[in-house]
Length: 120
Ligand SMILES: [Zn+2]
Image 1 (cartoon, protein in one colour):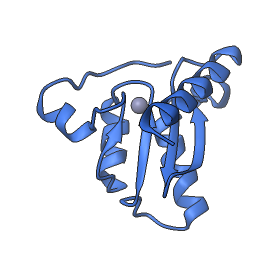
Image 2 (cartoon, protein in one colour):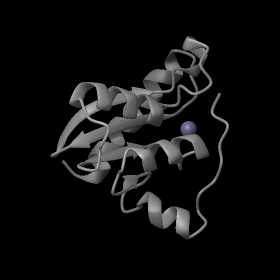
Image 3 (tube, helix red, strand yellow):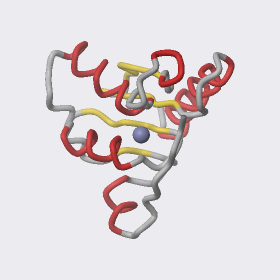
């Protein structure tokens, strides 16, 4: 699958969250071309302000893959990361994360395209 196909999965997942009353954010974590995790924000449902899609994806992937090092995966997210999700992505050692096809988070950070969001 291509970047845009994984992004579509993240977008569809975000839409599923919207239908459940959550903020419109989704994420899809991929390893070796296969989707490992697809999640959306669950902050409202879980009364957990940290339950953003990206953090949920990292938590679930670490548990499923039994590792704290996700450097061999790619995280596709439906928006630029908030500071918390950006930090979690750094701790997870992602080589790059897509917020849109062709965009990689580290360059986004360096170019100043990073922006804070308040998704709940
Ligand atoms: Zn976030």
